[in-house]
Figure (tube, rainbow, N blue to C red):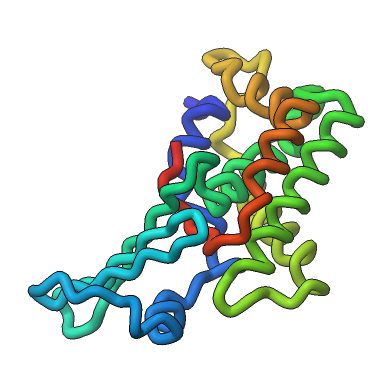
Length: 192
């Protein structure tokens, strides 16, 4: 059985290795603002957003990080992941969107990738952002090729196509502009 587009969107972890954040470097750069929480846990709250980062023991002698965008507009890393999946869905499901809507969706993806790339630590070089975003879409297409139910297929959920249409429209462009107004660390959580 093929999974509906909407089910695939639920599983987004973020933009992936193409736009990784070096949380250790962020913590080190803001060492004076890091709060010790005890039991090996430390927390940094970056005022832009705000974005909250928690460093904790990983149980194997190292550390792991949890980060949360607490801004009212949401996580930029999540938005990038959603747009990657929507563009992949539009490429796999021909006819899901009109060609001009696919183009607008791809432009939204590039705007999101640019915001994430510029604000990542370390930043992604400007001339690599589009290529990295394209690589994320190509990986998503391969991952979903065998399991995605496109609109019109038996068992298809219309939610993915509806999200893609919304993300290619003018209201989404306004939302995306508002999301990108405040530069902040583009963490992937929370994500729907």
